[in-house]
Image 1 (cartoon, rainbow, N blue to C red):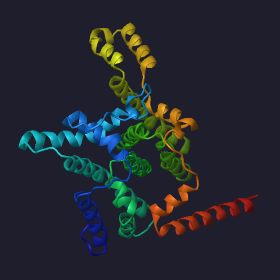
Image 2: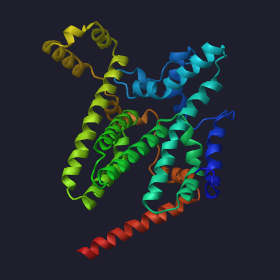
Image 3: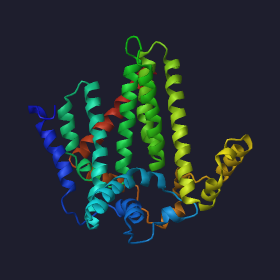
Image 4: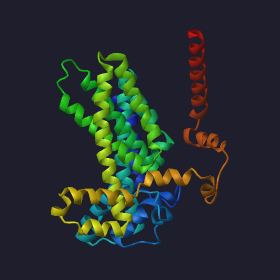
Length: 350
């Protein structure tokens, strides 16, 4: 209940998070929140392109996914266009384009709130106190409502965590009568993981945490942990593979006009034959545009990074203070204490 006495501070911060979106804002956190997202979508849908698409989308090996743009930004802008521009002849300006897309990201950020609430419940903590601390964060108020790939990444990670948490609880329930629900949740986790990887390849590292946590819970509390992990993994891998290939196909059709024309000319009767399907798969394998791989390949070369400006490693310590504020030294102290405790336990076991 968002309106009970102990939840009012969190509810106020939640309302302020959305209210803050509608305030006129003349600055930005990073040019990418416009150049790599809403400028491209607004240019495609509203005819207000102010500059050519950034190089990430126009090089021979694009490192940003068009499917992600269309999935997260085209939808809100299409709704805005049909309801307000076409329906009421509203004048399109940058303010409304920014508001509509940021509002969709803010709605997506509610997945993070749900994850915090679920984790608090699992750990026996005060749910609304945890939500209050989370919602009062500068990261949530500002970064979490911007059209940045990082904001999308955090929300997708939260969705994966929620799906795995519910799937494990349903699987381990007495009688295990929720087989279909478990499959749906695990498939959703696999699909969202594929979307997360296409959005930012770094998602692999972050998503490893909930997946390893789920595997640890299976090993600790289930009678047949190996069978459970196999069932979980098979369902997730199947859903991930189907979603990832579909997204790669979408990007290939978008970035490779030659392949798109061959795909359009392929008749259904021809496609359903063995030779036709084999020819299509061979053509797709040769022409595929795998943006996560291109992203990793490009950024793994220091000479490429030097073209955009490099920074010393210690700058992350400055960023940590900017992001966490007064909580930064507390976080560092707690992390150091945890590492020391873990090292001492290992020495005692030896």
